[in-house]
Length: 146
Image 1: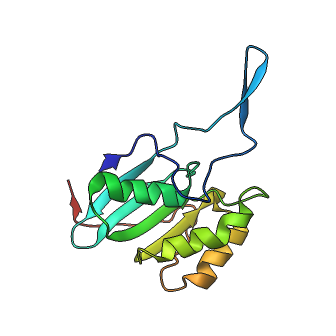
Image 2: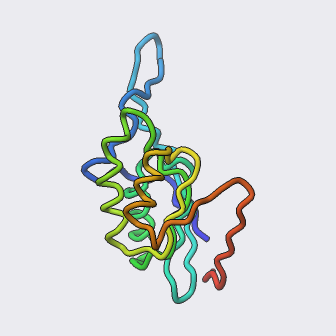
């Protein structure tokens, strides 16, 4: 298991939250939410399982960073919030889906902040990989390499 730490924003379409700001000494500053992170596991013979919280740095940035840090390109599952809901993020649903197809993951498991539109799009575009995750769902990924 690996805790990724800060995830760099490198994709050309995942640039963070344009409306997220904080106030310091009476001045508004853009907040890049640099403390976003994810957890990664390597399932022996299958590849990486990337588990995001809300993927504020972008799920593609998160996956690519996990691959870079581990040196493992095989992707078994991407699970978690992909943060593709709302007017600022719905325009990147299609490019995100296309980018998720490229590493050919076995499973795509969107949760909470992925949003209804993005979840439906992922299910339509990746029906063989898509798993619907509900509260109480239990998933077991066996033979995790330490």
